Image (cartoon, rainbow, N blue to C red; front, top):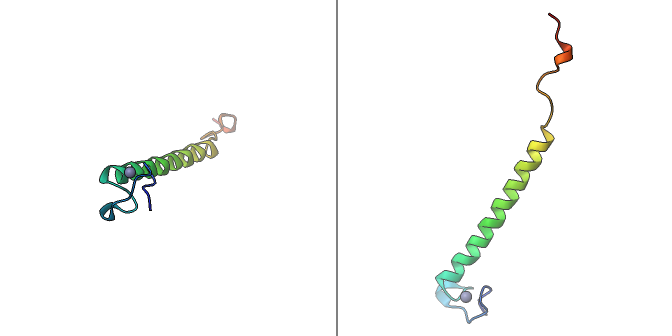
Length: 61
Ligand SMILES: [Zn+2]
């Protein structure tokens, strides 16, 4: 099996990666992707809750 990051022969210690560095690269990619998904969900939530807090025409004084 070869390293999914750099295609070199993988090391038993860091399978399926060839080194700690490639393992970190993959983890970083995964975390970045997860963060992007969370950010997109936040944006969507903000848009869906975009309504006026109070209606000024409904005031009687
Ligand atoms: Zn590698």
